[in-house]
Length: 564
Image 1 (cartoon, rainbow, N blue to C red):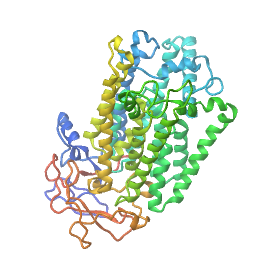
Image 2 (cartoon, helix red, strand yellow):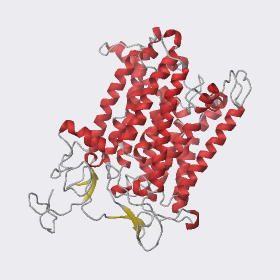
Image 3 (tube, one colour):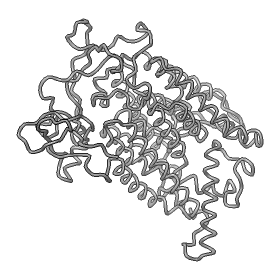
Image 4 (tube, one colour):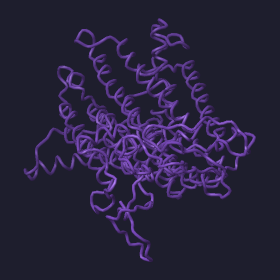
């Protein structure tokens, strides 16, 4: 693209021999990511140097990513459809890899007869998830009545229509997740495609109801990024009422707000979240305390799941009918020793993440610290159900938006579903031994740990951070974005300085990361509102990138007009 002259109206002229730098607005993945660059050869190669972006008023990056998500979700339903009618004869749910908790629990919890969760039946899920299940059952019952009376709609088994409605509602939640990631990506709107095209989403979108909680927590992050702490608290409170894991978000926000001197906003968010959770849970807890508390009691009495490192350790230690920390347990008895070990390990993870958040030379971005805490929590927890990995998906993309490692991790998650179901099938039914399943779990855990290590490297030396090398601070940070550090200097690691600057601090040499701007580094800045008193200095030379058209001096494209 080119611009000739400068008029008061800022008219853009093209086709001139001399080019001047255009306003930086958007990162193009085919210029900045090797996987995207390679994939683009199927449609003609990377985006051209003279091409324009932002001219199409309908097919914006968000709508393209949503369309990608719809296609993936459609294929996910095709995968699940053989199990939708509830006919699981011949272990179809395992041999066809289409198992879902929604189908058997429809009858177990009396949803087929109109039972109200917590009042008429005990439900082992948090309250808002129970209401989701009930709402889907009422919508499907309405459909069944219409199809019977009118005779114009397909006549489906009740469980089939219930599962179809559940899948449709969860699909809306998945699209909300894609929307949230796109809104939280700043100048990198195409990062949302990593969520929309996720193999993990394809495999586990309809395994359980976790997308319901992910949608609320993701929306809460968007509200926080828009500097609306009360709304963020309400949305996070709804997420906590659907699944407890968004409670960890408040801990990360505390660490980052403490460092930035923004505890007032954290207090508003936390108060709103607690109030929202209480409003949803208190009526059920007062009217049906026994059924309401089943979720908490079940988590107390639950032993280590096969997905957990604890169960692997028990197996290879030769434990039988006991854990590493408890004797033989009776019916309903809690594994006290295991629970204590998990609590201590979780506390250690929280302390480690807090240490990183407070001691890093530059304040970590919000998604980075959220990913580290949530991934560490899952690794040391005694339960890692397969759909729990969806919790990590939006955070992993926002923390380190790089296709190669993300695809490798998600491939292990998708592959893990096969050994799991084949182990459930049993060796006598042509299944596999549990050791093969443990091997798949171990490979998955190694990839998660590798992702964590890369994120720690990025935040400890931000010159590696793909997002900050794109010219942003923390697009998901809200009041934290561009905030000046208020935490005492002596408690923080000495900040990265510009190499060869006046401070005399030793710093690692400038690095070039594949697919990102090379030779970027930090220098001291006097003005507030920059990258915690650090900003990126422009590299000398043309700053050209590998795997991109020559002559383009940045991995971000000039956008003549912002898409609506």
